[in-house]
Image (tube, rainbow, N blue to C red; front, side, top):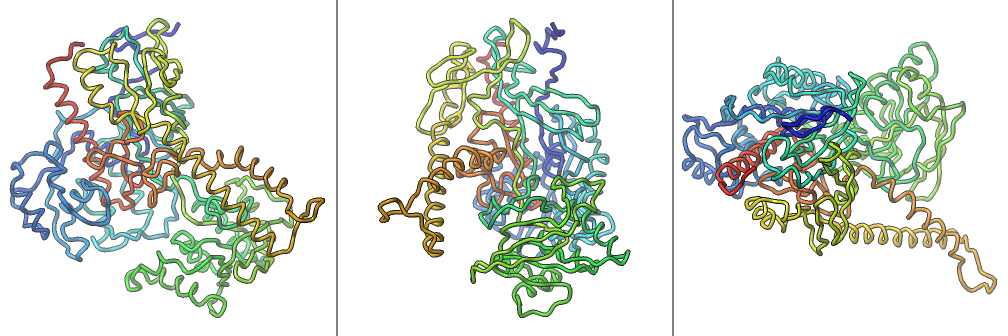
Length: 628
């Protein structure tokens, strides 16, 4: 039997942290900075804010009092901007006053260190501190000015003017140095992969779940690739800060044609393949065009990088990108150039660029043996010549191209594979008799390991059985009943979405079949034979639908029946606290997962979470009805 810590009542291979942050990019760094005790305070002699209503509210704010201890929602009021979340808007308005009106005013916030406010936490991330920024092409520059890429307490990136766009490599280095500058390394556990996040329930023998390890509500498991070992943390709160770019979209995901085996879908793979192809060109070998599929910023970056190396590009897209069109030509001349080439289409005469508007990929074949599993050490295999068929959606004609490789760059989505599909069937229970964490399951009206789950029509959260709680916790449980986790709504939404999609696809196939005069008649000759099609859709329903939704956070979004998307379906959070509403208590989200896709809004999301934690702490301390 493994050793047992009698004080914390935990096995020795389980570590307790009050907070576990998943993701070590800007969202994770900002959260760690504030959890470590760095809090914003309004400057005493700051200039008036250009927002008159906000300025009036600020005048009533207690002088010198940190923002996390103030009523943030009241201060935010009815602010409007590029975020749908009020606290990120408030912090951005105070950090960058009048930024959206073209003003360049100094910040109204000072970030001060309060060591007594430090909250014990750990930040888990796959690579270096800075996250995805270390994997991007160093030659690409940011859309936002460098001032908006800075983090709290260090307002400027080195060697850059505030309004200057920053190279990606500079931003990545800045984030990594930021962690060292403020002594946050002790909170970071880099080069780790989180494999599961599950709620836990303590046995009744442990008493009231308040204070230290006994307040843990989550178990976070993973693998440390640097130490070659697995780990387990139990924590009171878990914060999702992974960003929204870990999983590249595929053509199949977006309904834009057939999937293409072996296609490149990420910036690091594209950069490696580009270097391999450039090397072949320098050796005097003929290089076939690179096929780029997509019309957004990622596709535009790929086109610019390929042409800069003197490599030909064939560009397949549906229509010129609205995102590129919205960028001012004076600030973003390179993207304006790509948008103009797309507008010119087949009539344009641009060197090293062939436009293929209204084209989607249909099929791919290889002239030589081609390994679809990309190998960084053998990037030449990616550039093996191959043929691909494209369908012109206007003329319904196909064209076959000889290409070096295909890059499908049509956006990305978050990777939430570590979250359970259903929190109610993925519970862990601490078994006091065997001193271990064991899987538990919650069923409608059934009590298991001291937990009762009531299936309601509205989304609910899971609560411990009142009989096991003290007076205080029983009272809090009753108050939180209207916020406990969903089940039935998620299931019916999923059935509706899948069923509606299958029905629409059946209709589309029937229309195409009718236009092509491909009809299968029954023996009577007066009706179509649908058996083959029905069999195909049954296969889709069983296999592919579930695979497409895996790891997409289905059920957590504003639209519970759809996967998480940072722009169209962010995680459904409490706007003031950033607590995830469609999950058990104690889970939070910020940054792109919560719909804030600009770095400038991330500090506000972290502030909302820290403020919520401290308000809950204060409520516990002031309540005299709890005995541990």
